[in-house]
Image 1 (spheres, rainbow, N blue to C red):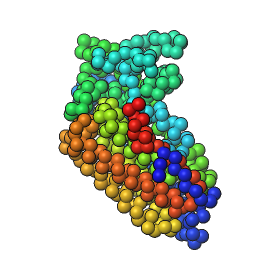
Image 2: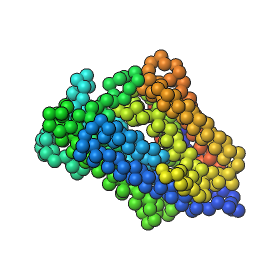
Image 3: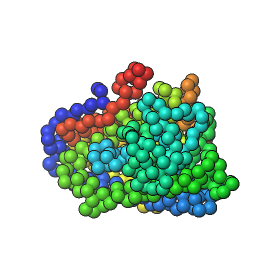
Image 4: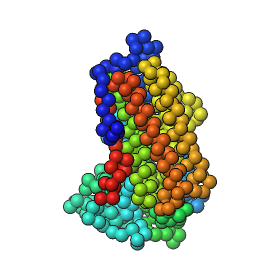
Length: 421
């Protein structure tokens, strides 16, 4: 079956659930909203820690301060990646996510790049604009005063400038680039290696414009914090995202299944993983500057599992849990529930193997190298597990008698030949 446009036919209501079912759909959706709120709140807490580390780096630049900011960024990714399952099926998240986690980005828009990077292209004339080096420039025919680099400038004028998606000026990956710099190692070991002196003052400054680079880093980090504050509020009591999910039980359950299936299949297995293997391209890494991609994949998969099992472990170690989609499916078809739980566990085993290898020095970009059979096996083991679990999510949709669910697809899975056209 082509999962790119998956249609599961049934009644308008989820009538496959027996009338005597002990699990309330409202309770399941409440747990779903509670986990979202906790995940975004943890993401906000972690982003504020990153903000403090960035402020410290700018105030007193040093190798240690840069490393502390990098570590804070890595830690901030852990809770955020577990929220990505909420993007699909929840328009309020999907409409917002592009300014927070968009990738890949043409980093030359933001700062200096290696000469091999090239310049403007037919697809993006601003691919090497270098806002940090240019306090004024012309954008889409308009003169832009970038003397002061502010969150408003990044969000209002630069992000997706000229409607080019790779003009990513905000979010986690803009901050990541400013902390690590370009990863010029190809499929060899190693992440970006931006020197701390890129933020130094006076004669110690390297690569010019250190004060403006600090301004950009601060503006991007401050904007990330405010964006996460906004989304956290949407899932709090009375927030729009929570109210929308709880206002229509059947639509809410469909949103949960849509998020699980779309992230598992088209987004993660396809666009984020198999595509990179097919192209042997480290530029297809989700966290390409920091070489943190293996963790992003791991926690994305964990987020899908969290939603199904109705349980999320917070960064302080406490657990948010409640009535789950698993319980709802088990009451409709126990065998499907057991199958899906086993598939989710199998995916986490594959992700853990990839993560363990990366942490031991077999980095994700090395895994992507052409002819590296061991690396391809690690990545494709996780891809195949994600595809396999999506088929079980399909069966859960059917067991619940949902009307129509459309999962995101990917040419790398559905039409591989198109990738090379």
